[in-house]
Length: 485
Ligand code: ADQ
Image (cartoon, rainbow, N blue to C red; front, side, top):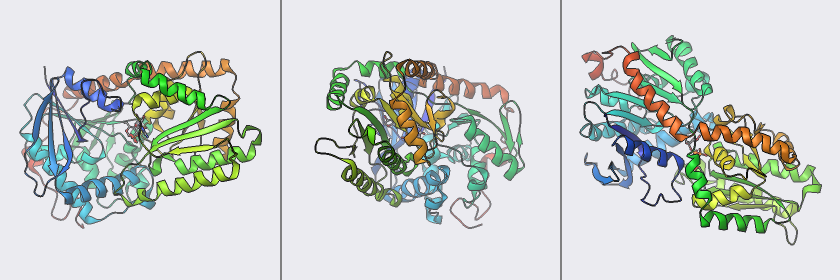
C-alpha cells in the first residue's frame, strides 16, 4: 500500500487523548495518515539562525512527523509577507489590503524550495503527496524540478478569486503555472472551481474539459470541488464530555431569561466581525422589544498578530462592543460580550448547544467549519437557528440555514429576529436537513474523495506529462514570483 505524505505549512499532531483544542482538519489528517502509514511534513513554528536543510523526525502513533525550522527572514517574507499579506487578502477579495513586495515573493519561492529540498529525501517512489493550502502552491513545481514523478495533489482551503482580481497580482501567471505541476487540484466549492476555470480560459486561453481535466502551459491537471466537513462523530463525543456539559450549563444558566446569540471566529477581516457587531446594533435599535431578552457572545481568538492588517481589528471590535453596551446595556444586562481568546473544543461545543442563534457571517470564506460545528452541537428536540453568510463556501451545502448578505446590517438583523421567533417545528425541520448534510459530507468523506481522486488521476492523465526539459525547467530569468518581468 502506498504511503500518504501530507504537507502543510504547520504540523499539529493531536496528542494521545485527542486534545480538546485540536481542530477538525488536524484530526482528519491525523486519521488519514494513520490509515496510510503516512508522513506529515511542515514548518515546526520555530526559527533558526541558518536554515540547515535537516528535518526533525519523530514517530507518533504510526505517523512520521517531519518538521523544519525556518529563518526569521523566511517567516517574515514567506509567512507574514507573501502568504498572509498578499495571497490571503487577495484570495478573500480584499485587494485593498494586499501589500505586494518583491522580497515577499522571493521569500515565498525560497521557502517552497527549502520545503522541496528537505522533503525530497523523505519520499519513496510509490508515495502519494497531498499538499495543503496557499502557503505551498509552488511546492509541486519545486519537487518536479528535482525529478520527482510521484502523484501530487493540492487542496486550497480558501476561496479562489475572480479572474479580474487575480490579475492584480504581479506575476499571477507564474503562480497559476505552478498549480499545473500537480496532478489533482482541489477547491472547497464549485464557485471557487469555476473562478479557477474562468482564469484558465480567459487569461490563459486554456481548455476546461467536461471530465474535470484542465489544460494549460502544455500540462493537464484534474481540478475538482471537495467540500471539507467536520468529524461529526468526534464532535458528538466531545459534546458528551463533562467539560462540554459544564460549559453548556454555565451558558444556559447565565442566559436563563435570555436567548443566547453566539459567534466563534479567529480574528480576521474576512470573518466580518465588525459588520456583524453593526448588524446586532441594528437589531437592538430597530427591535427594542428584544432588548434584555437576548445576549450576544462573540468568542474571537487573535490570529496573525504580526501582520499589520490584523493589529487594529481587536481594538476596533472593543470600541464597537463598548459603544453597543453603553447605548443599550442596563444594570443587569450586557448586550454584547466579546471574549478575545481561544477555548477548548469541549467548552465551545457546550456554548454552541446553549445558543439559540449561531451567527456565521464571513465576508468571504473558503468553507467555514464553525457553521457545521454549530449544527452538530444542537439539541435535536429544540435546535437553534444558523444564520449563515451567502459568501461562506458552506452556504453552498447548508441551504436550510437562514442565508444572509453580511454586508447588509438590515438583512442580518432581520434574520436574527426571524431565528428568535421561528416556530420549533420549522427549527427542527431546518436543523434535520442541515444535520443530514453535516453527517454525510463529513471530514472522512472529504479525505476519502480527495485521496480516491488522486489515485484515479493516474489513469486519467497522460503517463509521462513531463519531458526531462519540463522537469528541470526554471522560469525564464527575472520571472520568479519576486522579481520584475
Ligand atoms: P479558518 O479560517 O480558521 O479555516 P474555520 O473553517 O471556521 O476557519 O475553522 C476555524 C476552527 O477554529 C473551527 O474549528 C473553530 O471551532 C475553531 N475556532 C475558531 N475560533 C476559536 C476560538 N476563539 N476558540 C476556540 N476555537 C476556535 C480555513 C478556511 C476555512 C475552511 C477551513 C478548513 O479559512 O474557510 O473552512 O480552513 O478548510
